[in-house]
Length: 303
Length: 303
Image (tube, rainbow over all chains, first blue to last red; front, side):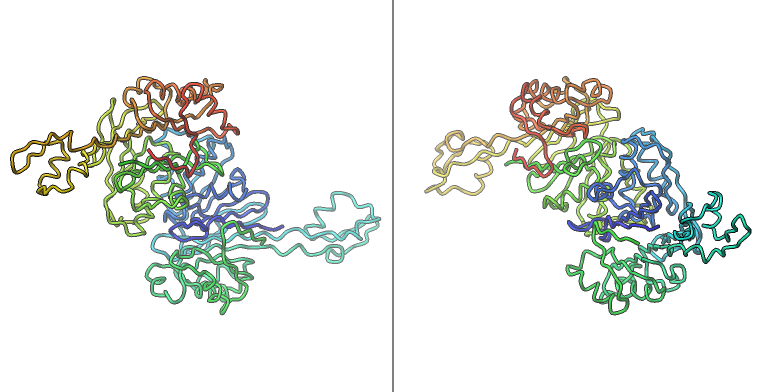
């Protein structure tokens, strides 16, 4: 099993020609999750050939416009294209009223069920789970109520060794039991210990998403060892005072969290438009945490 | 004097890779008016190198999302870039609540004054005027309250002939009076009739904007002889029933209005995404009204 992340927007509050507003698409277990939905997200989905019809969950980190102004348009397009599947939206309180008011103004009755879930927690909690993964959320530190997310694949089933199946007449009822870790007992009562006839499942992947937030080292515990961490890096350290005043992070601070949490890879984005040369971000981060990627719109990352 | 129109979006309800949602920018007398503001309009302004800081008025035809979902993001960017000038927004009732609710959710206090004006009329009325032009609005026929707009340049001042000024010592107080049409009387009491010492002002231009609307021939009176008429053409005549059912127009109907109103040029847009070959629209229109342009995103038209 694996996940695929597509960066749809990597600018901070103001879009540029190269970088749209915050949004990332995570493909996992046959469907998609959308993380934030800045204005123009539906256009980015078109551009990067991603199907909006595959989106099952939308997670909105906070109610600053650059993270959700594209939601009403995306939902509107889903409706016009005749979507029937439920759509679940998770966000801090206040979003449902905003979206419903706009559909009320046009007398629109959606073709599908839009289910709003309010996030309200002071610690990391399980938000929902599917067969293949769990989704956790935890509070961040910003000028408005803001949450981070972690998607954790569940441990898969064990794989039965091919050489064991070959030339053996095993009843089909045994396969799920062996995959679940049971020893196999043949018709003569002979026991085959599970660890001799199977191999371990693939390591489950995980992804954490942290934007917008001030430097918050105590959150490292909630994302320990994730395969990929996306962390905002709005400013360079030379603008540390601005970062503190606006409850954002510097590139160096993002790197420190990644190091502290011993994540495998770090992805940084949400760059302020004040910087022309973004390679400075990479220089700053890599001095602290080497395995780092600079987000670009359209970038795809296998996790 | 003249106007310049830039098409920012020419698709109907759903954006495509080539065509964004409804928005047009009209540059006149040193500032800009924005007509409708679908999602992604601020990105289109960037793309086509148009300054959002020059926008003084925003006119929203109706509260269907494809005509205004980009407004809150545009206003938000103006705020973040420190705009100080008032911004006037004209629309049917309901827009102010939608916009204010979103800024309340982020505790945003705008850096400039946002002034909402509610349009509510059953006939063509003067909405506002500037030194150089007047702006009229009139009701259209759609599934929600919808208005069209007409921008009419005022007749300019007369131009004083150069050969009259040369070698004559005319007191400066006379210039505005002559430009306004007064005869000149020299220090010896000799009268120079105005029409012998001036030339006529340039013909004033005018532009009308009609979207979204069903076929509405009675509106032709309100737009007689305009230099350029933008009229929606969502469907081809082969889909006349759909056009009627959804309160939209066909290309042929747009052409009939143009002919009836004896406009100089017609611009059609708001094409349904169901059609792949848009040249069919032009064929259909030109059979009725020859001087027609098919809207494309980024197109600039001098009026």
